[in-house]
Image (cartoon, rainbow, N blue to C red; front, side):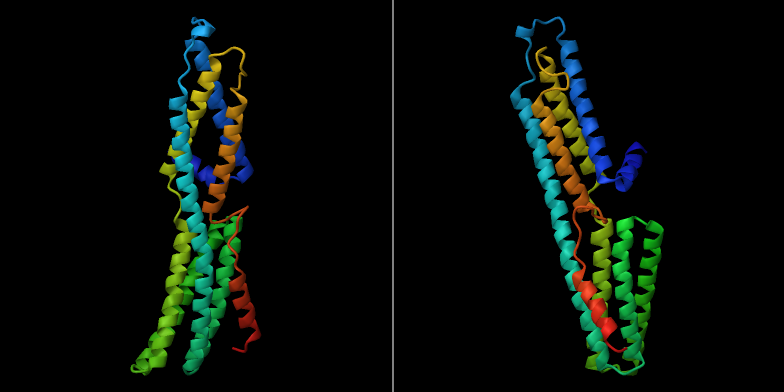
Length: 275
């Protein structure tokens, strides 16, 4: 229940809020480690106090770096895939639009109109995702599915009228590619996300790392209460990397965005052409 609530909050929170919350969490962990180090060794002379050991702390930090690199790579690959899918879907829609001219009207004209409507909806999906309007997004996706059904019904009717037509077969293949690529874009862009279990593991390791660093700082009274400057630098850089990963992974990016220019160009070319 708690993890679900945190996940919902993190999904809707701004990047600045996430940065501040993560920094506060890790600094609190460092302070707790410092207090714990001083409390456990309160009766031990400062010269005899034993740190946790650079090997253990280094191993934990190395594991944290590995997890961040793995997660960043996964988010970056998915971001690159989303960019590529925009180009592939634009090409598929353009191909289907051209092939509608090979078949008789009113079927070709109807499919062309549906493709124009589909492109408008596809661009609106991107805009709505940026504003996190889940209700409107669901409505648009439902409209897209209805448009797919209408296009395919036109193709089916054509195939029944001309069962041996190679031209109808070409159109059917193009329309099918449009439908398949839409499903792939929705899956990659909206649903394929970094699992919550990975985020929990990353934050757990980060908390342990800052607590260990704080513990070592607490062994010496001459060092800062908020641990050392290196701990503060580690927290700030960790937060920065985490924010990059979150923004790459989100459907609605703030610092990064998937270029929709090929789809915009397609929409413009449709508006300039006669139905």
